[in-house]
Length: 325
Ligand code: ZN
Image (cartoon, rainbow, N blue to C red; front, side, top):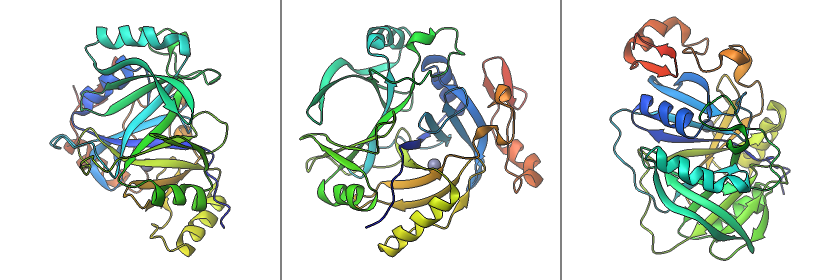
Protein backbone atom coordinates (compact mmCIF):
# COMPACT_ATOMS: atom_id res chain seq x y z
CA UNK A 1 0.00 0.00 0.00
CA UNK A 2 0.99 3.57 -0.58
CA UNK A 3 -0.18 6.83 0.94
CA UNK A 4 -0.35 8.50 -2.47
CA UNK A 5 -3.49 10.62 -2.51
CA UNK A 6 -3.53 13.45 -5.03
CA UNK A 7 -6.20 15.95 -4.04
CA UNK A 8 -7.48 16.60 -7.53
CA UNK A 9 -6.43 17.49 -11.04
CA UNK A 10 -3.64 20.07 -11.13
CA UNK A 11 -3.67 20.84 -14.87
CA UNK A 12 -4.19 19.32 -18.28
CA UNK A 13 -1.70 19.99 -21.09
CA UNK A 14 -2.73 19.63 -24.73
CA UNK A 15 -1.26 20.17 -28.20
CA UNK A 16 -2.34 23.04 -30.44
CA UNK A 17 -1.05 24.44 -33.72
CA UNK A 18 -1.35 28.24 -34.12
CA UNK A 19 -0.61 30.02 -30.81
CA UNK A 20 -2.55 33.19 -31.67
CA UNK A 21 -5.67 31.23 -32.56
CA UNK A 22 -5.26 29.30 -29.31
CA UNK A 23 -5.06 32.49 -27.21
CA UNK A 24 -8.00 34.05 -29.03
CA UNK A 25 -10.19 31.01 -28.47
CA UNK A 26 -9.39 30.22 -24.84
CA UNK A 27 -9.48 33.82 -23.63
CA UNK A 28 -12.06 35.32 -25.98
CA UNK A 29 -14.50 32.43 -26.38
CA UNK A 30 -14.05 30.20 -23.33
CA UNK A 31 -13.23 33.17 -21.09
CA UNK A 32 -10.20 31.76 -19.29
CA UNK A 33 -7.36 34.00 -18.20
CA UNK A 34 -3.99 33.64 -19.93
CA UNK A 35 -2.02 33.28 -16.69
CA UNK A 36 1.42 32.56 -18.11
CA UNK A 37 3.17 33.04 -21.41
CA UNK A 38 6.35 31.02 -21.35
CA UNK A 39 8.10 28.39 -23.45
CA UNK A 40 8.16 24.63 -23.40
CA UNK A 41 11.17 24.10 -21.12
CA UNK A 42 12.10 20.93 -23.06
CA UNK A 43 11.67 22.68 -26.44
CA UNK A 44 12.21 26.43 -25.90
CA UNK A 45 11.43 27.37 -29.50
CA UNK A 46 7.76 26.63 -28.70
CA UNK A 47 5.42 28.54 -26.44
CA UNK A 48 3.84 27.04 -23.36
CA UNK A 49 0.56 28.89 -22.77
CA UNK A 50 -1.27 28.42 -19.47
CA UNK A 51 -4.93 29.35 -18.94
CA UNK A 52 -6.91 29.27 -15.73
CA UNK A 53 -8.83 31.33 -13.22
CA UNK A 54 -7.65 34.73 -12.00
CA UNK A 55 -4.52 33.29 -10.36
CA UNK A 56 -4.18 30.07 -12.31
CA UNK A 57 -5.01 28.04 -9.24
CA UNK A 58 -4.41 24.28 -9.36
CA UNK A 59 -7.51 22.45 -10.71
CA UNK A 60 -8.38 25.37 -13.02
CA UNK A 61 -5.45 25.10 -15.45
CA UNK A 62 -5.39 24.01 -19.09
CA UNK A 63 -2.13 24.57 -20.93
CA UNK A 64 -0.91 24.14 -24.49
CA UNK A 65 2.18 23.44 -26.51
CA UNK A 66 1.37 25.17 -29.81
CA UNK A 67 3.52 23.44 -32.43
CA UNK A 68 2.79 25.42 -35.60
CA UNK A 69 3.33 22.60 -38.10
CA UNK A 70 1.85 19.77 -36.06
CA UNK A 71 -0.48 17.33 -37.80
CA UNK A 72 -3.96 16.68 -36.48
CA UNK A 73 -4.02 13.77 -34.02
CA UNK A 74 -6.59 11.01 -33.77
CA UNK A 75 -8.83 10.31 -30.80
CA UNK A 76 -8.66 6.72 -29.60
CA UNK A 77 -7.40 4.36 -26.95
CA UNK A 78 -4.46 5.29 -24.77
CA UNK A 79 -5.38 8.98 -24.78
CA UNK A 80 -7.18 11.49 -22.63
CA UNK A 81 -10.09 12.03 -24.99
CA UNK A 82 -12.00 14.78 -23.18
CA UNK A 83 -11.20 17.62 -20.81
CA UNK A 84 -14.19 18.84 -18.81
CA UNK A 85 -14.77 22.23 -17.22
CA UNK A 86 -17.37 22.97 -14.61
CA UNK A 87 -20.11 25.57 -15.20
CA UNK A 88 -23.23 26.51 -13.22
CA UNK A 89 -26.20 24.27 -14.18
CA UNK A 90 -28.32 27.24 -15.31
CA UNK A 91 -25.56 28.36 -17.71
CA UNK A 92 -25.73 25.46 -20.19
CA UNK A 93 -28.15 27.22 -22.55
CA UNK A 94 -26.13 30.42 -22.41
CA UNK A 95 -22.97 28.51 -23.35
CA UNK A 96 -24.72 26.71 -26.20
CA UNK A 97 -25.71 30.09 -27.71
CA UNK A 98 -22.37 31.72 -26.98
CA UNK A 99 -20.40 28.91 -28.65
CA UNK A 100 -22.71 28.96 -31.68
CA UNK A 101 -22.32 32.75 -31.99
CA UNK A 102 -18.55 32.34 -32.11
CA UNK A 103 -18.71 29.57 -34.69
CA UNK A 104 -17.35 26.95 -32.29
CA UNK A 105 -17.73 23.32 -33.34
CA UNK A 106 -20.43 22.07 -30.96
CA UNK A 107 -20.31 18.26 -31.19
CA UNK A 108 -23.20 17.49 -28.83
CA UNK A 109 -25.79 19.94 -27.50
CA UNK A 110 -26.63 19.75 -23.79
CA UNK A 111 -27.64 16.21 -22.85
CA UNK A 112 -27.72 13.88 -19.87
CA UNK A 113 -25.04 11.25 -19.50
CA UNK A 114 -24.69 8.57 -16.90
CA UNK A 115 -21.84 9.19 -14.48
CA UNK A 116 -21.50 6.45 -11.88
CA UNK A 117 -25.26 5.97 -11.67
CA UNK A 118 -26.11 9.69 -11.63
CA UNK A 119 -27.33 11.84 -14.51
CA UNK A 120 -24.93 14.59 -15.43
CA UNK A 121 -25.74 17.37 -17.93
CA UNK A 122 -22.97 18.07 -20.40
CA UNK A 123 -22.31 20.11 -23.55
CA UNK A 124 -19.44 19.01 -25.82
CA UNK A 125 -17.49 21.07 -28.34
CA UNK A 126 -14.14 21.06 -30.10
CA UNK A 127 -11.59 23.85 -30.02
CA UNK A 128 -10.09 25.14 -33.32
CA UNK A 129 -7.52 22.31 -33.30
CA UNK A 130 -10.14 19.64 -32.62
CA UNK A 131 -9.52 19.23 -28.88
CA UNK A 132 -12.66 17.88 -27.20
CA UNK A 133 -13.96 20.01 -24.32
CA UNK A 134 -16.96 19.15 -22.15
CA UNK A 135 -18.84 21.77 -20.14
CA UNK A 136 -20.44 19.95 -17.21
CA UNK A 137 -23.31 21.41 -15.18
CA UNK A 138 -21.93 21.36 -11.64
CA UNK A 139 -24.23 22.36 -8.81
CA UNK A 140 -22.32 23.46 -5.75
CA UNK A 141 -19.01 24.38 -7.38
CA UNK A 142 -18.15 27.46 -5.32
CA UNK A 143 -15.12 28.51 -7.35
CA UNK A 144 -15.55 31.92 -8.95
CA UNK A 145 -13.70 31.44 -12.24
CA UNK A 146 -12.33 34.47 -14.11
CA UNK A 147 -14.59 37.44 -14.67
CA UNK A 148 -12.17 39.57 -16.68
CA UNK A 149 -13.75 38.94 -20.08
CA UNK A 150 -16.43 41.48 -20.97
CA UNK A 151 -18.39 39.13 -23.24
CA UNK A 152 -18.86 36.53 -20.50
CA UNK A 153 -21.02 37.53 -17.52
CA UNK A 154 -19.48 36.43 -14.23
CA UNK A 155 -22.46 34.23 -13.40
CA UNK A 156 -21.75 32.06 -16.47
CA UNK A 157 -17.95 31.94 -16.18
CA UNK A 158 -16.17 28.61 -16.36
CA UNK A 159 -15.34 27.66 -12.75
CA UNK A 160 -12.34 25.40 -13.32
CA UNK A 161 -11.60 21.84 -14.35
CA UNK A 162 -14.32 19.28 -13.68
CA UNK A 163 -12.70 16.03 -14.88
CA UNK A 164 -10.84 14.27 -17.63
CA UNK A 165 -11.93 11.21 -19.60
CA UNK A 166 -9.41 8.52 -20.53
CA UNK A 167 -10.26 6.07 -23.31
CA UNK A 168 -8.69 2.66 -22.82
CA UNK A 169 -8.73 -0.71 -24.51
CA UNK A 170 -9.15 -2.39 -21.10
CA UNK A 171 -10.51 -0.90 -17.91
CA UNK A 172 -8.96 -3.20 -15.31
CA UNK A 173 -5.23 -2.42 -15.50
CA UNK A 174 -5.87 1.32 -15.38
CA UNK A 175 -8.52 0.99 -12.67
CA UNK A 176 -6.22 -1.01 -10.44
CA UNK A 177 -3.47 1.59 -10.72
CA UNK A 178 -5.89 4.42 -9.97
CA UNK A 179 -7.34 2.76 -6.87
CA UNK A 180 -4.43 0.60 -5.71
CA UNK A 181 -1.46 2.87 -6.26
CA UNK A 182 -2.87 6.37 -6.62
CA UNK A 183 -5.43 6.16 -3.83
CA UNK A 184 -8.45 7.12 -5.94
CA UNK A 185 -11.93 6.00 -5.03
CA UNK A 186 -13.94 4.00 -7.59
CA UNK A 187 -17.49 5.30 -7.82
CA UNK A 188 -18.69 2.69 -10.31
CA UNK A 189 -20.40 3.26 -13.65
CA UNK A 190 -20.89 0.98 -16.65
CA UNK A 191 -19.90 2.81 -19.83
CA UNK A 192 -18.07 5.50 -17.91
CA UNK A 193 -16.19 4.30 -14.82
CA UNK A 194 -15.69 7.19 -12.45
CA UNK A 195 -12.84 7.68 -9.98
CA UNK A 196 -12.52 10.54 -7.55
CA UNK A 197 -9.81 12.14 -5.45
CA UNK A 198 -12.07 13.59 -2.76
CA UNK A 199 -14.93 16.04 -2.66
CA UNK A 200 -13.16 19.14 -3.93
CA UNK A 201 -14.16 20.36 -7.40
CA UNK A 202 -11.87 19.22 -10.22
CA UNK A 203 -11.09 15.89 -8.58
CA UNK A 204 -12.72 13.43 -11.00
CA UNK A 205 -11.23 11.05 -13.56
CA UNK A 206 -13.46 9.00 -15.87
CA UNK A 207 -12.39 5.97 -17.89
CA UNK A 208 -14.29 4.64 -20.87
CA UNK A 209 -13.10 1.23 -22.03
CA UNK A 210 -13.80 0.25 -25.60
CA UNK A 211 -12.34 -2.62 -27.56
CA UNK A 212 -13.62 -1.24 -30.87
CA UNK A 213 -11.96 2.17 -30.85
CA UNK A 214 -8.80 2.80 -32.89
CA UNK A 215 -5.55 3.43 -31.13
CA UNK A 216 -5.19 7.14 -30.42
CA UNK A 217 -2.55 9.23 -32.14
CA UNK A 218 -1.12 12.00 -30.00
CA UNK A 219 -0.68 15.17 -32.07
CA UNK A 220 -2.59 18.41 -32.69
CA UNK A 221 -5.93 18.60 -30.91
CA UNK A 222 -5.15 15.88 -28.38
CA UNK A 223 -4.13 15.91 -24.73
CA UNK A 224 -0.43 15.53 -24.00
CA UNK A 225 -0.67 14.70 -20.28
CA UNK A 226 -2.79 15.01 -17.15
CA UNK A 227 -1.33 16.36 -13.91
CA UNK A 228 -2.50 15.62 -10.37
CA UNK A 229 -1.98 17.74 -7.27
CA UNK A 230 0.63 17.14 -4.59
CA UNK A 231 0.45 19.56 -1.65
CA UNK A 232 4.22 20.13 -1.40
CA UNK A 233 7.63 18.96 -2.52
CA UNK A 234 8.28 16.64 0.41
CA UNK A 235 5.06 14.76 -0.26
CA UNK A 236 5.91 14.62 -3.95
CA UNK A 237 9.31 13.13 -3.16
CA UNK A 238 7.75 10.45 -0.94
CA UNK A 239 5.11 9.61 -3.57
CA UNK A 240 7.83 9.38 -6.20
CA UNK A 241 9.70 6.82 -4.14
CA UNK A 242 6.53 4.77 -3.68
CA UNK A 243 5.89 4.77 -7.43
CA UNK A 244 9.48 3.65 -8.04
CA UNK A 245 9.13 0.93 -5.39
CA UNK A 246 6.00 -0.26 -7.19
CA UNK A 247 8.11 -0.83 -10.30
CA UNK A 248 7.17 2.21 -12.36
CA UNK A 249 9.54 4.26 -14.45
CA UNK A 250 9.30 7.74 -12.98
CA UNK A 251 11.24 10.83 -14.04
CA UNK A 252 13.37 12.71 -11.54
CA UNK A 253 11.69 15.71 -9.91
CA UNK A 254 11.78 18.47 -12.55
CA UNK A 255 11.67 22.22 -11.88
CA UNK A 256 8.80 23.69 -13.89
CA UNK A 257 9.26 27.13 -12.29
CA UNK A 258 5.59 27.39 -11.20
CA UNK A 259 5.56 23.89 -9.64
CA UNK A 260 7.82 20.84 -9.57
CA UNK A 261 6.84 17.73 -11.48
CA UNK A 262 7.31 14.00 -11.88
CA UNK A 263 5.98 11.99 -14.82
CA UNK A 264 5.06 8.33 -15.38
CA UNK A 265 2.67 6.35 -17.56
CA UNK A 266 -0.46 4.48 -16.57
CA UNK A 267 -0.92 0.95 -18.01
CA UNK A 268 -3.05 2.15 -20.94
CA UNK A 269 -0.32 4.56 -22.04
CA UNK A 270 -1.58 7.93 -20.83
CA UNK A 271 1.18 10.17 -19.46
CA UNK A 272 0.51 11.22 -15.87
CA UNK A 273 2.24 13.98 -13.95
CA UNK A 274 2.21 14.85 -10.27
CA UNK A 275 2.74 18.59 -9.74
CA UNK A 276 3.03 20.64 -6.57
CA UNK A 277 0.50 23.35 -5.68
CA UNK A 278 3.29 25.89 -5.15
CA UNK A 279 4.94 28.22 -5.85
CA UNK A 280 2.29 29.17 -8.43
CA UNK A 281 2.14 31.64 -11.29
CA UNK A 282 2.80 34.84 -9.33
CA UNK A 283 6.32 33.70 -8.47
CA UNK A 284 7.83 35.73 -11.35
CA UNK A 285 5.27 38.47 -12.10
CA UNK A 286 2.52 40.19 -10.10
CA UNK A 287 -1.04 38.87 -10.21
CA UNK A 288 -2.25 41.83 -12.27
CA UNK A 289 0.38 41.23 -14.94
CA UNK A 290 -0.04 37.47 -15.37
CA UNK A 291 0.40 36.27 -18.94
CA UNK A 292 1.14 39.69 -20.44
CA UNK A 293 4.89 39.25 -20.95
CA UNK A 294 7.05 36.36 -22.09
CA UNK A 295 8.50 34.83 -18.92
CA UNK A 296 11.49 32.50 -18.95
CA UNK A 297 12.95 30.45 -16.11
CA UNK A 298 16.38 31.63 -14.86
CA UNK A 299 18.24 28.94 -16.77
CA UNK A 300 16.77 30.10 -20.11
CA UNK A 301 17.16 33.88 -19.54
CA UNK A 302 20.70 33.90 -20.97
CA UNK A 303 19.29 32.74 -24.32
CA UNK A 304 16.23 35.04 -24.31
CA UNK A 305 17.27 36.82 -27.49
CA UNK A 306 17.48 33.62 -29.55
CA UNK A 307 14.27 32.30 -28.01
CA UNK A 308 12.34 35.47 -28.80
CA UNK A 309 13.65 35.44 -32.36
CA UNK A 310 12.33 31.92 -32.87
CA UNK A 311 8.82 32.59 -31.51
CA UNK A 312 5.98 34.01 -33.60
CA UNK A 313 4.42 37.32 -32.48
CA UNK A 314 1.61 36.99 -29.97
CA UNK A 315 -1.13 39.30 -28.75
CA UNK A 316 -3.53 38.81 -25.86
CA UNK A 317 -6.37 41.30 -26.05
CA UNK A 318 -4.73 44.74 -26.32
CA UNK A 319 -1.37 43.49 -25.08
CA UNK A 320 1.53 42.76 -27.37
CA UNK A 321 2.93 39.77 -25.48
CA UNK A 322 5.75 39.00 -27.86
CA UNK A 323 7.19 40.51 -31.04
CA UNK A 324 5.98 43.68 -32.71
CA UNK A 325 2.72 42.14 -33.93
ZN1 ZN B 1 2.21 19.32 -17.03
